[in-house]
Amino acid sequence: MRLTIPQPQLLKTLQMVERAVNDRSTLPILANVLLQVDDTSLTLTATDLDVGIRCQFPLAPPVERGAVALPARKLTTIIRELPDDSVVLEAKKNHTATVNCGTSSFRIPGLPAEDFPILPEPEYADRVALPQAALKALIHRTAHAMSMEETRFILNGALFATQKHELTMVATDGRRLAVATTPITTAPKAALQAVIPAKTVRELSRLLQAEELEDVMIAPLKDAQLAFTFGATTVITRLIEGQFPQYEKVIPAPAKQTFTGSRQALINAVRRASLMTAATSQAVVFELSSGRLVVSKESPELGSAREELPVTYTGETMTVAFNPEFWLDVLKALDVEEIRVEVAGPDRPAVIRRPGFTYVVLPMQLS
Image (cartoon, rainbow, N blue to C red; front, side, top):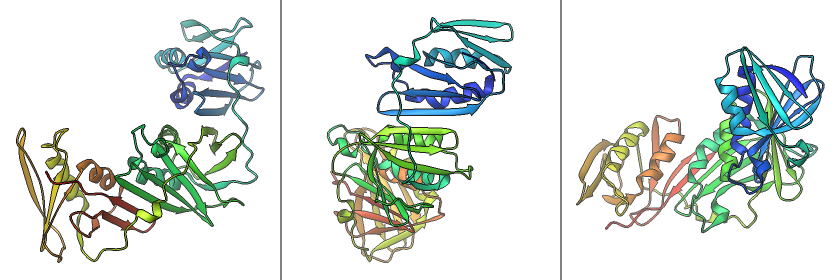
């Protein structure tokens, strides 16, 4: 195997796939990236057996066909340190590769390509298709609500579900819920319902390019797997098996009591109040009265913070406590100047409803 490629292009592609590498696996091959050269292109593949990333790009001749698995972190580190010049990479039959660029030369021992796990080839006869920007926006608005706790494994990811010509993404950790919906370009024959692991969701957010016009194609695979293809990149993921909660049942009916105010001002007030929180006392207090919202926090150990915001509110005086991170996450994910929040009561969930988006957050007990 032999190829010549610009250093920036090789580095960029290695950085795209190496996040799927598992350095801690008992299988040494999973710490490697697979390089495959055919007559016209180079394909780089990495996987940890839960998520796999494959990128392909064209090569200028001359090339020599072949394949080799090389240590992913070491190869990326070497390529990063090379000058912005042509890199000549050559692999011998003993699975050792040489990397030459300018006056620099490296020799890297590898492993047989035959030992590398084979990623399935997606078939997109029955697929979901939507713009990359649309899928990236769904992830941005909901991924923050995914659970990081291992006690309820089904919540360590996000639900993808199609209905007619819409794709809905849902994430919850049991204390907050984010639901976002977007139109799709192509609907599948059979409705798609799959729970995508959190790692895959984060990698998709990193790899998707909102400015690209080419659609993302999503196709189910055998053995509870799903493929996402966009441009020259394919992400293949195992799905989380189990029954995702019936999220529709926990979304409250619209409340009559609401407040409307500046999104950025609320971000600033909640962030400043959160400076006085501690691991044993996280709740930040919202005090609502006619025309104003007071965001405050008192801590015997750290002190206190208080900030008053002008809002549109005409309901009864109310005091509610929330986890500040649950507000900061959603407010940063929205791109509106004014935010409207439903507050049914001190022991009832608060709700943000916008076209194509719903967010529900449970209150905390006041100590």
